[in-house]
Length: 185
Image (cartoon, rainbow, N blue to C red):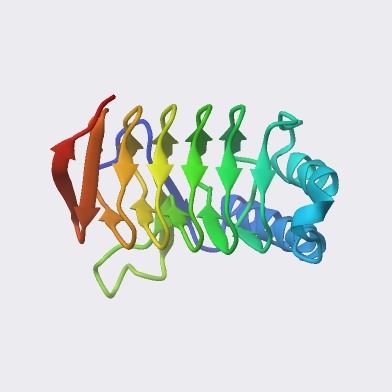
């Protein structure tokens, strides 16, 4: 398995895995409170999300609950970001969302996973960062996998599974997602 400088490997029964579990427990407490709110509670949603990620989000940030995450502390969001309802962000590997990003309902952004080998599957967690660049639209039900960068101005089609980098100014779709065409004004 490749272990470049962006990859985190967290073995079971270690101080790192205990910290990961504590982070999950903290996130579940905060998201339980956040998920009782409605669209009309935008200021409270922003306050709880800011608490979750450990930094104040811009007043232009909009998130419609429910929302799920495994940590929160490794999420960074820019200005004018919109996250629709029922999204899941597994952020252990780091998740950077730039300005002007739109994320549709039921989107999963998953930075972590397990080894394929059955004997190793429960031995550790592998996490790689995800970068969503400026002005990206991720449509309903898409899944973005760890280690991926979605390039500026790109669109990920509904239901797509993104396993490789998305070039800027492209429309991708399918499972695995492939470039369908270039886009621009």
